Image 1 (spheres, helix red, strand yellow):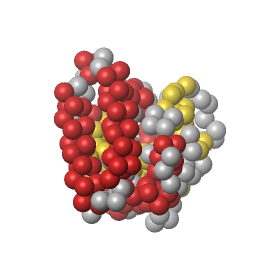
Image 2 (cartoon, helix red, strand yellow; image 1 turned 180 degrees about the vertical axis):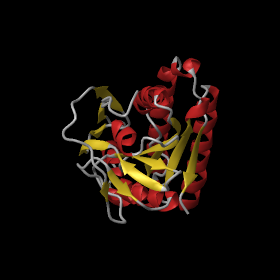
Image 3 (cartoon, one colour; image 1 turned 90 degrees about the vertical axis):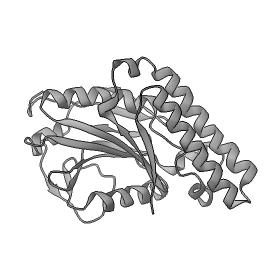
Image 4 (cartoon, one colour; image 1 turned 120 degrees about the vertical axis):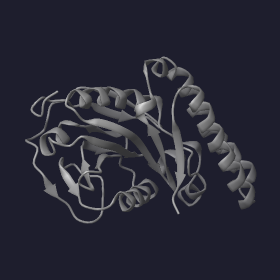
Length: 245
């Protein structure tokens, strides 16, 4: 795919996932140098010149306090963040990778970041003051990975490597090493979907029966995450959760 070729996908997220369909561009893409704070925006081409670590912290804050979803590239070569999500909403956004190919045509490697807002947990009967107890409860969905595998293939045709997919939630972030995922892994996505559902429901039960014992919560939460990582690895997915300090 060349810089002038349109590649736009509509992502309408469910509680943990998204569906896709093509959409038309709204206006010509131009670079907009943004302020120091990342936030969901209707504007394509917003560039945040902040470090990777600072960007992750800001996305985690958004996951806790903002109901809107958006998607960004982190570009290690230039140490900047590029917003490539259009029509942001609480149900998802329209990712437009063509933003990267237009504004940074010589870039060789990127990572894709998006947030899973904590408000999704309210669908399980929990409230904002309880969200802090659920870091790691919202891993990448089957739809997230399926779409982004397609995006990786499109970027690869333009010489860009999509190295990692990162999903930031309240208190940490999931990192998926896309370089390890192959066609055999894609065939197992239905099993991965069941794994995600079981993982999130286990979090609900964990909190429900141990919410008055913070030490138990912390121990069991780490055990749940390790178990998820191990079972994802059995499906061919190198996936790790990192707690924010």
